[in-house]
Image (cartoon, rainbow, N blue to C red; front, side):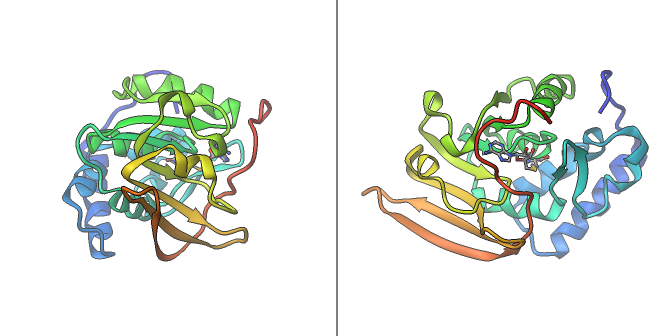
Length: 222
Ligand code: SAH
């Protein structure tokens, strides 16, 4: 990441088109998700020395021991979100801010929480610079959700949750959806919880993914 707005060249746009075709072949069909992936310059979220990795379908380190999720994973979670314009969305695990930008591009009002102070500071400054001033960033512990702004239409967790935090289920509106990779080991199961009108939940599972762990409490150091 830089302090000046990075450049989105024709070369990068071309690589992004190819990446989106690849993601489509891997089974992502939601036109809103595909359009957002084609719009948001993923290389903006990379240090300048690693730009050539930005359009590979792979996760990548972003500092502070964290990673920007693999594009397919971002697309998969975004598709499960079933975003409608102006949905109020809570993201746990801001990281680089890329997933938050994809959701904003899909028309959501995004609130995002990060527990690593260094990443929080860096990404909070960066998002307005690359054209996403409306994304609201918070330094805090995602296990607690964001009581002051609840309830949400959608909640997305982008770190491996050893269990499903009760606060995140509580902070969903009826009809709301939580998308969360659940598992205490290396591999997690992508899971959705739909909140029914009677406050019960319908749970669905969608296969194996690998995320960095969701840790308890804020970290003031990196
Ligand atoms: N969505 C990010 C990828 C996130 S990687 C992106 O698009 O780049 C997971 C992130 O979750 C890391 O930045 C990590 O610090 C953060 N995290 C882990 N536990 C957390 C918690 N309890 N609350 C908030 N953020 C957390």
